[in-house]
Image 1 (cartoon, rainbow over the protein chains, first blue to last red):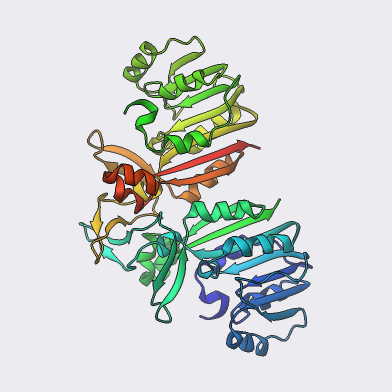
Image 2: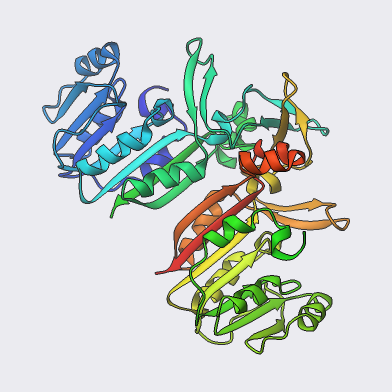
Length: 222
Length: 222
């Protein structure tokens, strides 16, 4: 598995997307450009992928042939869309790294056309909340996810992929408040974990039904 | 402390309420009628409190003098507002006991005037989710709330107040989906735990900042 299909939450996130034919699409934290190329394949008129990593963008450019896809190196903490002309802003698992998400959402909202949409995923607050992440068991031996610090929002340091990665913990209430303040009206919210059918096909995912791993949000510019 | 002021989340829930002067108010699961009498004191034109417990309603009636407050015994699993005439439906910590919340919300929505609002509290899904509720500690000794079963919604048996009380666990995503299906548009969502100031004044509440105890929702009939 690789690309979008390597992300188990992709089918759910995909189902939250509007039709893209003829649309102008922004991908915030585009990485290797998987979503950008998929969106172009869906008939998007223009796709702009933004990422801070020049290495990732180099591979994205190398793997992209469609002329409707462009990439731009920028730090999302400061990035502003070049003009208010996008129908969809998309972001997969990037926002929980940002300290000034309020600022980015305000700039992205300004970059959306009236009725334009934001569809994004973040690590679920149950993932970002605890000071020490990791499974334990309850008194009956059921896999259990220990939660603390939920109401104390702010940085968390984890050792995932690289040592000392800093994520920003925010509650669900705060994510929704940030959308509202940016003039974005929530239209869908899902707490993703594998379905019973997915666990049957991938028994190693069974713990993942004990708590959602991802929070998926859709909102429309009001 | 007693009545509304005995509930630490009341100031937050109160702040989510519209002005009540001249309004028609429905209280779903009114208990001893504390909110009903408070609403009448705010100038509500009519308040109808509904509860399944005749004992609680007897005390509610005995403590109520205002002619604008009425009580009705009914099971919320089947209750329907007598007419589509209410400006506000309120409910404190009742919905998580109901198996057919979708049915109640549909009937309540039908009982709201256009633009009418629902403001309610439920036990936060982090409270209703685990099979065994209770504090543990993480490896640093920090009070920790063990979560499992979050994505497996349905009944949970607890021994709070009485033995064998059955609550219905629903995810946040499901609460929001149930509102949408009832034609109610979310306008506010808060995950309540005590503020830092409240903990300073009530040190015995300090654990309660580790995870929210209540989910507070406001929605408007679309």
